Image (cartoon, rainbow, N blue to C red; front, side, top):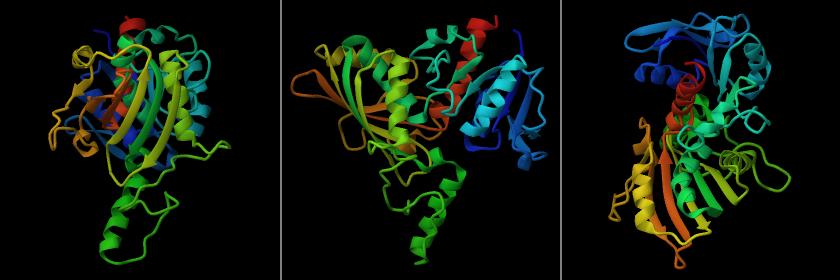
Amino acid sequence: MKKYNVAVVGATGNVGREILNILDDRNFPINKIYAVASSRSEGLKIPYGNGKELEVQSLDKFKFKETELVLSSPGSKISAKFVPKATRDGAIVIDNTSHFRMKKGIPLIVPEVNPKDILDLKKKIVSNPNCSTIQMVMALKPIHDLFKIKKIIVATYQSTSGAGKSAMDELFHQTLDVYKNKPLVAKNFTKKIAFNLIPHIDEFLDDGSTKEEKKMIEETQKIFNDKFEIFSTCVRVPVFVGHGEAIYLETEKTIDLKKLISNIKKFPGLSLVDKKIDGGYVTPDESAGEDDVFISRLRLGANKKTIGLWVVADNLRKGAALNTVQIAELIIKNKMK
């Protein structure tokens, strides 16, 4: 099997480190692996695989000419600057930031949902969807295939790791300070996150929604190539890893629950845990470290054209790093034989 030169950009962040772990876990066919980050991290040693380490190289100095695949998670402004240079040097870039997601001619991929879109690689860029979008479209796909979705209402419960390591640290320290009766310091969130819910992720838009909510709507429509109605409310919660979503949807066809359950069970990357007893569901905390997206609390509406479900996933794995590596595997399968 051919092996590839791979660069992980943003290697010192939550997602970058998880990408390195998953590349090793899945025995990705690597010839050379490069850990790349900002100049502040240059020379830092970070773990890779079983007892190995990689020395971080500065993005400002890194040469992409001998790199075939770049797995990128450095932040939108940084991606906007370096990705065009990397593609000019011949690399294919899989980018985790929001910068390229809605650009025409750049595929937005969840491999289990829309793998054929990977065939359009003229710009040598593939975009990885938002974490909350990925787990939602995974759950929606087996429903849409059978009964055609008409409308979606979703409320997310997103962990602090989605806002980065500093946000996780803030939750940790605020939690300790509550018990110590000390003043709480908030740097990442405008209101305290410990023992609280914040109904606001990313910037507010003129219509009162937020950028995070807009991302979920536009990305889902692009992935499905369908303009069904979506209403989203995104909430930050005091959890370290794992996102939850309460989804209500309407379909054009009458839902056969037995057929749907059968379709979910066959769908790659989905696990149905719905025992209808106390504890017979999956929580965000239980999803941490898992690759699957978990569906619980399936229940039909009275007219059998509506259904509710609870969806959780590890936002750092399937919501980001795992999906990125799966895209790389899909590219190899289709474009680099």
